[in-house]
Image 1: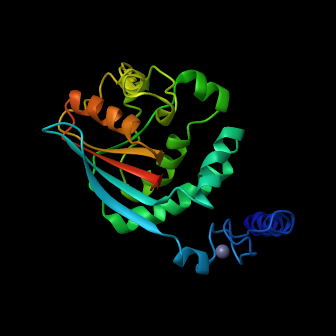
Image 2: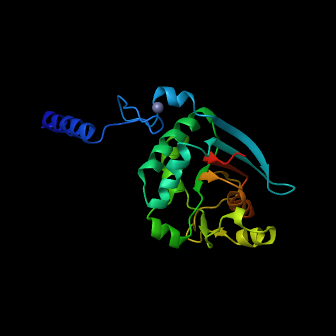
Image 3: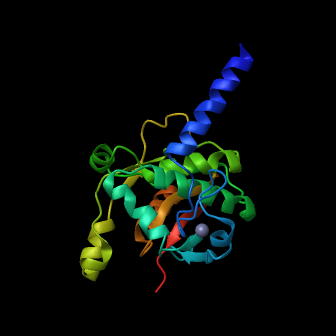
Length: 225
Ligand SMILES: [Zn+2]
């Protein structure tokens, strides 16, 4: 029976490979197995790395960014706007490999939440999908510690006053987390994209407000000027 199931699985794998062969998302060359980038493209990814962002006179946040917001990664991130999940899973594979090199220390993983209307419309939260790829590498639980109250507009289109108003009271603590305290916890915040950084910084301040010991942010892409 087991031999029969294995045989069927192998047949299914061959059919899948014929109908949907693996290809590199950057150069689009066919690949021998289901990875995201070919070995050549993997070597030419411009890794950004880590920096420290100051949130207040006493608080800061380390920001770890895998790569720049440019081809092909911008295309993969923007695919979420069309409801496509596969590119986010592909980015999840890449960032999980990047995390292995970082040796991050945290107690929990917190995805940056979407506003419930946007989540319902899109059908998924890209930060949660990324967190699912990262959790097995880090070996820590995913906690939906924050709730988002506002759909933020793009910061670049706003004046300084509007920007401040745009990010005020975006997040609050998820009241459903009755038995989960953030006190003295080291938190790894996850998002797909870091543009102005204001959204992630506001989320980090909310986590600090509820007792977090440290907050680090991990993103796939960062906008670089
Ligand atoms: Zn390639």
